[in-house]
Image 1 (tube, rainbow, N blue to C red):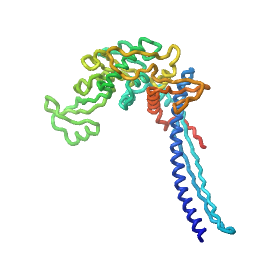
Image 2: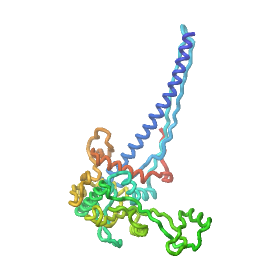
Image 3: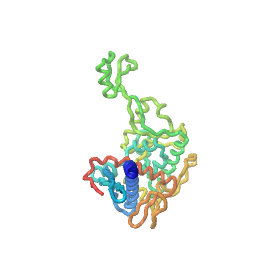
Image 4: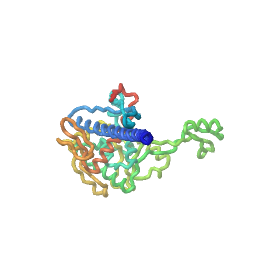
Length: 388
């Protein structure tokens, strides 16, 4: 009888352990899948940098879903043998994952890899705290200098194949980084009240108010004529200024937004005015943003005539922080790097992110841009499903 009670107790313990075992296994599996997918995406970026460095086109494949079935079974029994009962226990588990990967091609490839990035992505990354000079060096193909009337004056190319322009671009980036570090730079979307030509001589009815509200408008008393006018709050284009745009009137902000809106969506207006912090280094123009493909090409071509070089800051610029030679350093070696540095093997060599705080942050920035451009895979071609 005592042995039977002991066996029953062991059986209960095993069943309890089985429940714990299932939870622990599921936890480890989820973390393992997350680690694997993240590592694959980092390696895809590095492999494409290697491809471009070897004169080959890029190709992207993303994991759109992982479905895993976990099966836990417990077998237990008490066998009557001589001279005593024997407890027969068994715990088994099985995992059956199914991974769906999607190659990015066709229209999605054009829109997400080859199309220049929109100004909102630049604003978002700077707002998240990325150094503005790091974002500029990776994302911007150059600066289009314009007249105050919006006419093209010249272009400052951010490629070391044009040394004089590259140096000027780097010095402008350091100037903006210094202003940003000292809280004297404003980066964000313009916001202003826009008034339409619609007018009412009498107060609007409830129906008028409802219709206006549905279209984000509201009625307000019109200045001067005693009637009522329609207005709405408009969020416009991204600008970089050395003054607070909120100090401008609505009409001035609307005019500045119209000037920014005359540029394509991948341009970020820059208005550094005299009479404000950093105004002795004035600039009016726009950053021209690259596509993800061009960003990878810029990083990949850091050799030979295309090699980036050191640039000193302008005498008018204060301390702007780190100023490394490369926007993103990738080391190419014959052996795998130690530690956990992001790396990928291609063509028998290893492509590794340089082991500096700047380069690790710059690669994180590149990874974030990748996530911002290839996350929607619902309608991309025919997925490839792999069952393990």
